Length: 95
Image (cartoon, rainbow, N blue to C red; front, top):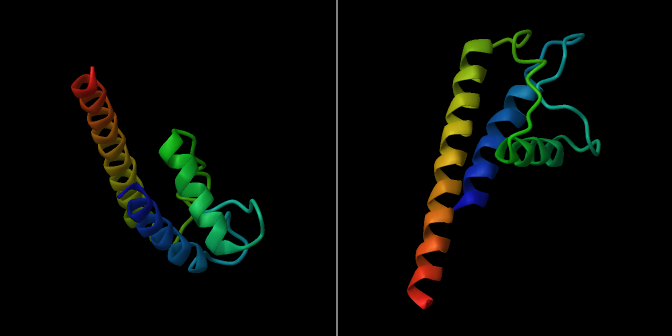
């Protein structure tokens, strides 16, 4: 479930990164050099709580990008909390 969510939001940011105007700060920083992998790495960093939003304000569709950023942050947080509850309940059931 987490992988599906991360890949879905990384796909959105990959597409929005392709629509970045020339000379503006890209939405997704370059980590490896491959835009697809860089988008997945950016979403993994967002899931861990570290993100880079320098290019969001300069983007062509800035309100949409901020909206999806907040959706991604919220949904990943809820997914992590759900995983934590499942792990704790499984541990409690075995003890």
